[in-house]
Amino acid sequence: QVALEYGQAMTVRVSKADGEVMPIVVVQQATVLHLKKAIRRYLELKQQREGGIKHISWRYVWRTFNLVFNGEKMDEDGKKLKDYGIKNRDEVTFVKKLRKK
Image 1 (cartoon, rainbow, N blue to C red):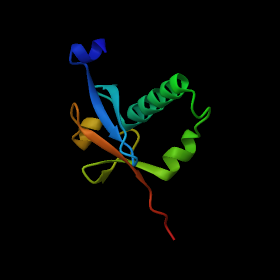
Image 2: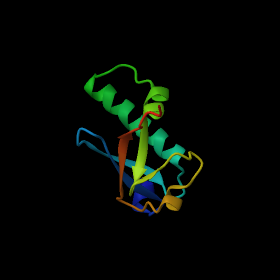
Image 3: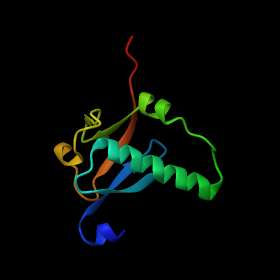
């Protein structure tokens, strides 16, 4: 929160299929991997507060879902969010991967 105030961090809004939007805070120079870890942290804290599902298999989540920004899949973990053109308060969506036959 302090980093946000000083402009060292940004809020990325991640929207899920059920319409829920999660405000995720990451540093300005964050990579896709940083965003994924921040999403994981956010959801685990939320589950603790609400007492919901005890365990989420993150390996399964990232195998079956993609993060998408402006129609572009964010599949390179090492690539910076800025390289995808993501700025403060931009929206990223969770999209189910299509199966290859």
